[in-house]
Image (tube, rainbow, N blue to C red; front, side, top):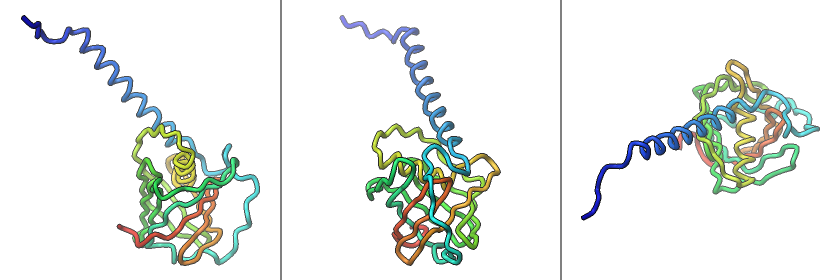
Length: 185
C-alpha cells in the first residue's frame, strides 16, 4: 500500500517562504538598478569627453530604431553584439521606448539643439543576473541615458550622427548606435 497523504503543512510553508524570498530578491535588485544612476559622472564615467559640436544634433534621429553597438565608460569600450538586442526608438510624438537587453524603458522625450532630454522614464524591473560583460555594459549604458531620480531630466548629447550611425554621451557614459530601421517595429 502506498502512502499518498497530502504534504505536511511544514513543507508547504518552506516552499512558500522560498518563493517569497526569491520574489523579494528580484524586486530588490530591480529597485536598486533603477535608482543606481544619477545625471552626471558616476564611477564608470569617462574622464575626458569630446567637446559637443554645435549643430550636430538634428531631428533626423527621431522616428528610427537605433541598435546599441558600443558602450564606453571608465573601464574602456565594450562592443555590444546583436544578440544582446539593446536599442532605443525616439518617436515623433515625443515618446521613446528602449530595451537594454533585459528591461523595457519608456517615457517622454524632448529634442534639443544638442540632443534629447528624458524625464520620468518608466522601466520594467526584471532582475538580470547575466554575468556577460556585453549585457552588463548595455544595461549600464542605457541606464545612463534613461534612468534617474523621479522628476530629474537626463540630457543626452549627440556627439556625432549621420544617417546610419550616432554617438551620444549621457551621465558620463558614451554610447554608439547603428540605425536598424524605422521606429515602431
